[in-house]
Length: 467
Image 1 (cartoon, helix red, strand yellow):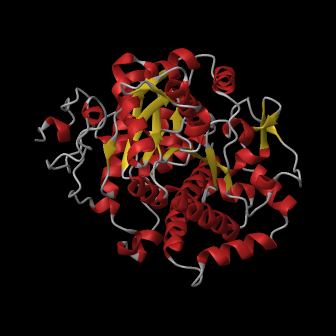
Image 2: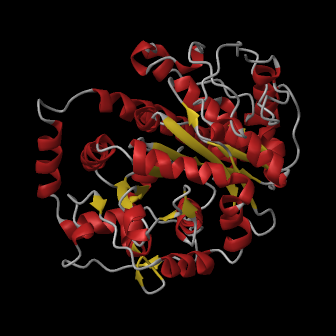
């Protein structure tokens, strides 16, 4: 039975705190009724709750997609400018720049909705055939260079540019999957420890905690015996965080652990065939530790390559049709893999990297913050961006998700591991992200918000950060 605390922001039956949502209503528990799913993790999910903000794309009016949203913070951001000039011409230029950046942020939101809508429309009677034919016409070198443009200066220092190699299959546009090539658990551990000096204590330890032994036994039983799928879901603070998290789970499950009274051991070769990870296709254009970064990941899992659909894609000037075609092929390959059963898929669910708002930016979005949360906030904050409809489809296809909040910032290292939870509706997927945000905030002390839809606050944050 669901307690009022599960839906009103107080401690739920697992001792966690669920974010306060006045629109939530009590309902029947949505967790998978297994021993591990009641130890910790998200509050029970209500599959029947209807939230107007999450209406399907085809139910939104054209006016909603095309209307320019009101922005209550232009004046606030303008007032915070470092330029002391107060003449009318300077104010007008500054205001125009801010409006332009806010307009770009909302253009991103509108294009994101438009791209998601296009995913619902079949390009032909044979979407895979259309996608494959289009990608085969693309020049491999030009495509590779465009994808390389997705890399940002603030991406992990572990990654360095990689030259196009015609002998490497995953450098070609039609490649959407890289099969696993495990080299041994020691190799996985070495790469992970080099990528994150706190790996053993921060990432591996929570999985290896004797108090969570039932969780690992449950994952083993689901994958190896029952043939059920699990999605490992995290926030996305760093480009390498999802790979390091999966390495922590891999080491915990293979490094001398036994299962059942017969003390069965799990070999990395067997586990890698059941482990999958979704990463940005940009990773195929990067090197790590002197080898292709994708080869590092393939030591422990099958890799699926995804492309972003909004601002990052426009910045890299990748043809939107090629982006759509690549994702069509990737999701078809992923669907066939999940249909085999017994698959764990690790992914940073929002796809877009979390937005970190420093103290000096907070005042610029104060009005939007007050409107969104009904409270003032002057400290740093972290903002998890909305889930794509395609991501939620994958979560629902897996049915069971294992949420995890992670922060790899050396100043606030944290890993909060939840429990396997059954998701039945898109609203369940959003509530899992709510739990991740709340867990991140508890572990780091940093105000953390998951935005389940595009809103004024998120648009103003993007604008403030891009100044």
